[in-house]
Image (cartoon, rainbow, N blue to C red):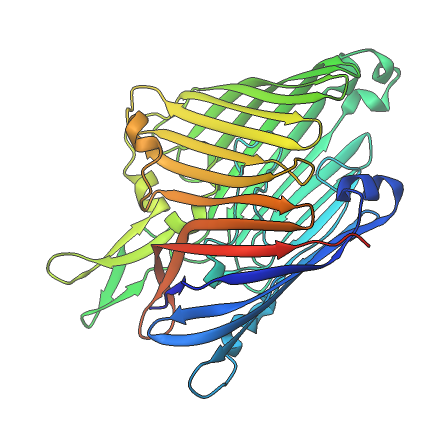
Length: 446
């Protein structure tokens, strides 16, 4: 078992900064970026390490790169802990373009990946822990009349693979110029966890030793339809209808409206309201979500010290009720600087089914203060349960004060998960882990 807890001051310094925002620079084909670094101390298990970190983020036009280099030097023999550099863990991401561009590609950590309207794969995170970081990919190509979106969670081994192909059939005909109906879009989605144990619902015991059954991949297929209702410079609305089927299990439908509005560029709003209906037993919407990599497979022990399995497939197999309900999301952007977003899902007649996502960012244009946070919570029962941190929670929050334009003093709090390992070095599950990191940062324009 590994655990890591940062307990001393982490100093960060910005060595390179440009006066314009990344978005503005990308639009102009310019360059922007920042180089951050720090020193501190970390305890991994019962061993102390000096920490030296570098975290550059640079954009060249539509190209972007983010790295996260962490060198752990033993306090006893000054050896470097090379485990942190395995599997290209130091690469946070490489990207070209942005989601919804005609061409978009990202390689690295996937924070909130999505396919189509998100009925099958939504807010998917491929790295459940900073100690178990994975390299995934997103690739989207829009040719106007048709296109494709893809997600792959782990390029170094089997993982979650998803693809959505879509076509705008009327664009091949003269009817393509008709308002609203001309942009009708039809899509097909396939998503699967290719790991051989993703359908496991039990353990196989051989000679008193528990082993994986390796029941095979868990796959979900779906169809969707999108119809733009309004297209203008200040307001857009799209009606959609989705169907999804978990192979060998249940199926369901969703219908809703996606909207975005702009008030003279001062305030931008994006909203989504969805009704999920026709759900059968053994079906759950957004099977691949922010918690999937944590829930998919965990081995524990019961009171008799016998191995037990908790998996998403097992929970699905034992599900006897339907998952019909509502889903809504909202994002507000003020002056391109302050963003606040949130989403909530609730299943009919299930008081423990609330699922929440919240996020905010004040950017770098507001004087004196800086706030950035993200929060996800599963199985919410009541209002008090919403902000109780436990094994159902993911959180990061950073609050900073800027005494001078070039300095920021902040406190970073993260509630994430650390992997647990068996005697063979394989990950058997995750346990909650919190980190508290005070920081002092500097930024000098060039």
